[in-house]
Length: 208
Image (tube, rainbow, N blue to C red):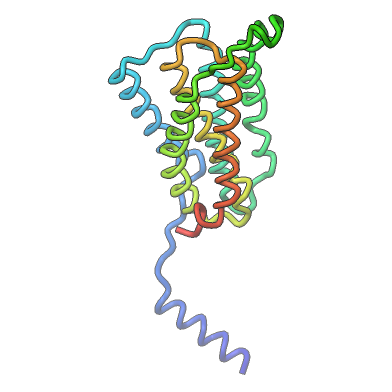
């Protein structure tokens, strides 16, 4: 009975199952959003008159490296059986980015609270959230096509990539290093995107 049942199931699958199209490699899947981000960034910077001071180039480069490495890590970890070492791929770039972006706070810290720029620029917070969301929505849709078995690390890496991409763009429209309050806005936006990704990972990364 069991043998006949198995043969029946195999025969039914052979008749009715649709052919499966394997996904491209993670690197090839990551190329699409990378190319799209490059195109949109170029259009936004040229169309909106963005520019960057030479002193902020290291920060922009570190943010861009974080974006690229987190993106590659997210696509790699979305595939079942991928090495967990991909979790550490963007770590060095992330630490470098945070260190460089926080360098502007050192002068304020040496001056004490009286020298702190308490006003800040809250518009940066809204721009980071908006930019991170615009980058994250299509990115999460592409990540969902791999149907990740463990979606939380994939979601967090995707949120990190979206945050870093938005921060990279912001350096072209924020001509001065962030102060203490500005850096707080940056952290708040990044944590907000990461928290949303962690809470909504089952919806954002549902099977395609």
